[in-house]
Image (cartoon, rainbow, N blue to C red):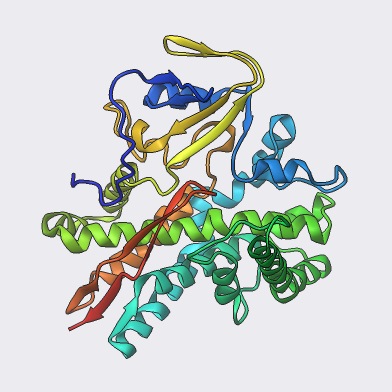
Length: 367
């Protein structure tokens, strides 16, 4: 396999679990990371969980921020939307169609930003899974909600207040243009999608908006980054590109999983222990903050497939098959184009709030 394109400079060799001076336990080994994520004696940390915990108790927490039996039951009931069979039966044709539409844009213009093409694909697919209608402007509204440069919202400074107003504006825009119309349509006639399921659970419009806002970065933003980093590798490694373009679908997906192990989009997973958690060689006490370094665990010789790139345990990302399938469909079509070349390499940035990287400016063109 090739070398990493995204370097976090946090490579650790040696002890798989360390207790740092700042009080945080840091997990670098694959077996220890998997055991920690599978433990039922942990809860979510990070991902603005502190802000969510300040919300009034009457407001239902999105599934990302729930733990225990309530979380497991929700995941059990929604698992059917993400199985490999469901992905092929319900979403493959959509993935094929949207991928063709985006590549037609490239053919007409002769040159395009890959992050834009891939984001439109990811938005359309995630919208279908959720039950959003994917009307005009949805991709633009979500792009504005997750800008390349992001400020911390709040009331402690004029700049923070600006970001607070900005976030509220685009949240409301997303709600009124996309979420509310979809919810109203599903309340009249149920469909086989996540919004219909949430309605049957008794969720309010606000509850459903919260789930959609959580699903957006999980199902759209991360898939875009994965498509871009894989393309970057394929453009700069002729042997790898030949392996991918000449392989059958299972071989291509296996290569994608290996690249995701090498380049995990989410590079850090945070948990807090609620009871002592035994890991290989050490027991982490209750009430401890634990950071699982996916960039390190995935380089452990024990890691296979995508490693911990989709997490593990109760909070394992349910969209694994969706992400891999749409990535393969899009890139297989893209690299079949005659005269395709990379016109500009991407610039790399890191979004510490979600512990993920982002790539922008990867320009592709047809010679």
